[in-house]
Image 1: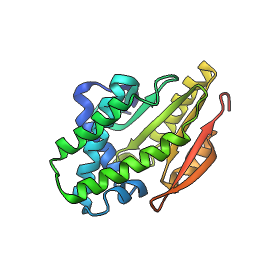
Image 2: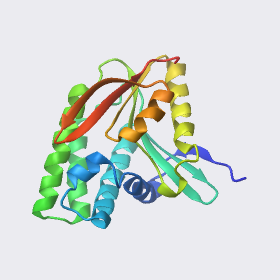
Image 3: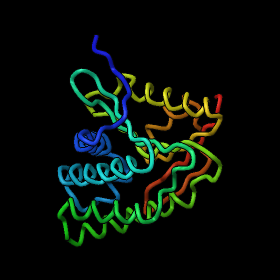
Length: 209
C-alpha cells in the first residue's frame, strides 16, 4: 500500500496545490457567490489562482502543508500557528492584486468578484478570535481522493499540534456538509453569519477534546 504522509509545502508544489484546492472548492457556496458570473471551468481556474496566492502568502507567514503519496499531491491546507494571523494588511493587498494580475481578467465580473471577496474577508476578520490559537485557513482534498479519510488524517494531525501547545483551534466554513466532520473532531459552532447570501459558520475547538 502506498504511504500517505503530511509534508510541508515546497514552492514548486504551489501551482499543483492551488489546482487541487480549486477543484475541491468548485461547489463551495462562498466560491459560487464570489464568482457568480463565471462558468464552471473559469470558476475553477479563478479560484485555483486565488488559492495559489493564499498558499504563497501562508508560506511567508504561516505553515502551508500538503498530503502526498508516491503518485503526487492528494490534498493541501494552510495553517497559521498562534500569533501569525491575521496577516499584515500589506500582505492581504498583495494577495488580492496578484490574483487580479495572474488571472488576467480585467473585466467587470472580476472586480465584482474581488469586491465580494473583500467583503467576505472583512466579515471573517471581525469574527476572528483574539485568544492564542491555531487557524485553519483552507483545507481541500482532490475530488478523486475524497472519502478516503484524508481530511480526518489532517484534522487529527493539527489537533495534536494544538493540544501539545495547549491552545485552541479555529476555522470557518461555508460548506454545510463539512460540519459533521469538524464536529466529530471536537469543533463547535461559536457563531454564524449570512454574508451576501452565504452562511458562514465560525468554529472553535478547545485543547484536549
